[in-house]
Image 1: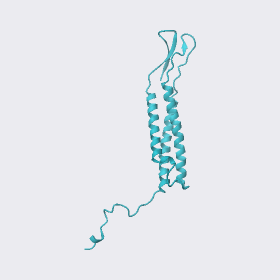
Image 2: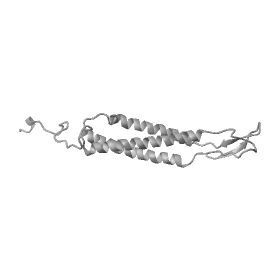
Image 3: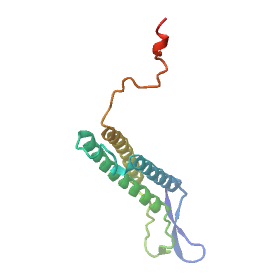
Image 4: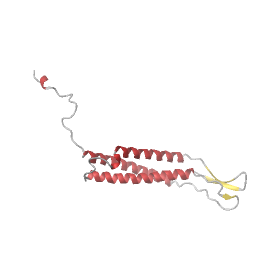
Length: 163
């Protein structure tokens, strides 16, 4: 986004004229989608509050707690960057000085705000995936082998074996 100081056509005041930029819409869209993904993950896992495997102190439980905290911290950081960046990007100051008086500065958003939001979004994604994996493993007791289970479509009844 670029900004320049422009004189007002009706009086001697000046204002900042900003070019149009789609990053505000993109930032708010990313904010909403990240919020939705966090709600889905925490809804599916019942927000680490419930589950039979989380009572026991296993390594899967420890990993689930670590990645739960990690995903929430990165989520909050990403949401803060995306929301603050979108709000700052949408803010257009008008009439900041008097024409010919003081030098005014048309502040624009630093490019690193959305980059930090994107990086923290990626970390939140990784943390959420590992949190879901560790939570599922802790809740089910790990991987279990299932033997002699199924619908029984391939087994012959005993009366057909006798000829």
